[in-house]
Amino acid sequence: MSGHSKWATIKHKKGAADAKRGKLFTKLIREITVAAKAGGGNPDTNASLRTALDRAREANMPKDNMTNAIKKGTGELPGVSYENCSFEGYGTAGVAIIVDTLTDNKNRTTAEVRNIFSKKGGNMAGAGSVAWIFNTKGYLAVPKEAASEDDVFSIAVEAGAEDVKATNTHYEVFCDPKDLENVKKALIGKNIKPETSELTKIPSNTVKLNAAQAKQVLSLVEDLEDLDDVQNVYANFDISDEIMEQIANEIE
Image 1 (cartoon, rainbow, N blue to C red):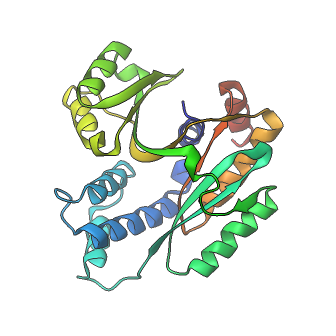
Image 2: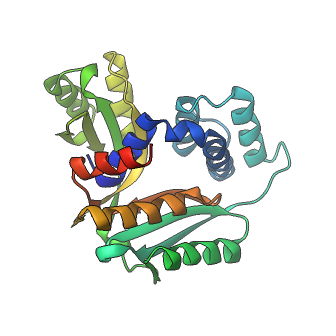
């Protein structure tokens, strides 16, 4: 499983995601509002909004919250104006990191992100320093118990997927961003429900970490994700399943 996705899945199983549900709702509301502002309030014609709403439903967000977020984006309700800002940097062992934010105060967010990089042994880098390592892809994770590898592969590829990889617990499906919705619908149409469905950034190369390095990098990523303005953090670390489980057990 891609490094960051694997860590996110482990945290979810450990219950950490539920503990931060309120913070997750705040991030999703911002995402819905910005998507509605950019492309209108109809998810049938606004793919970004449709994806954001799907993620909100997966998080069990109340319908009223989603409706109000859309109305704030379309101007039917008053709301804060957010802008997209991305930051690039390095963590321990030269791990490349991209931090995507939605903020109403770029100076504040820049200072907060820079402070965490500094405190956690990393450093900020200029625009373009690490972005070239990552490609934006559609990503779905299907639990192994949901279907056979052959079924997931044939259904996903026929719907436009570029690659399917098996891990210890999941099948990872990768596709062009424009094909994400088609692949998801095709799987669900065969009663195969993805555990995760999102746009993500996939690194073209990775940095393998030992246990000590992994703890430092994951601590940096966790602190960045905890910032209210941060929507997503992407990194090109490669951490073995054994080390991942070891660290996850330590934070229980």
